Length: 168
Image (tube, rainbow, N blue to C red; front, side):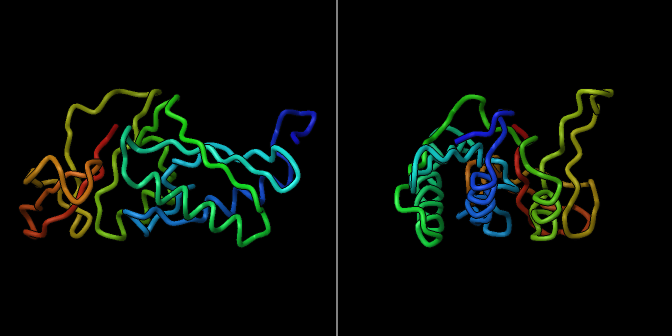
């Protein structure tokens, strides 16, 4: 059920908004849409919907919870047959996180990943800004934090520990 232009139908757009509003189970401050893991929603027949998700990394344990939460939200909104499919290509990248998602991560106390730029010089510094005080004088405490996609750092200025969402 796709329009002649190849774009999504109004129903698909509405269902994508519903699925995209599901909070990430590991980072509930951001939605699946803001995190960039929701790839597509397709209406494949009356009452039948297929949702495409790309995990932040292969083997991400949260993908099952994401799928269950999407199914629940769509069932609650009248879609009886929901199929959530894991799509590994193209791979998810931290560039898929929306500007709003980056803002929410920072407000929550997680240093968001730096966006990659393809239209300018590559930065020579890898400074990570503290989400508490803004200092770039930070140190790595552990390559892994509460989830494999985050590292644990500490700010040398305010001495507060914080998570940093790794660039992928």
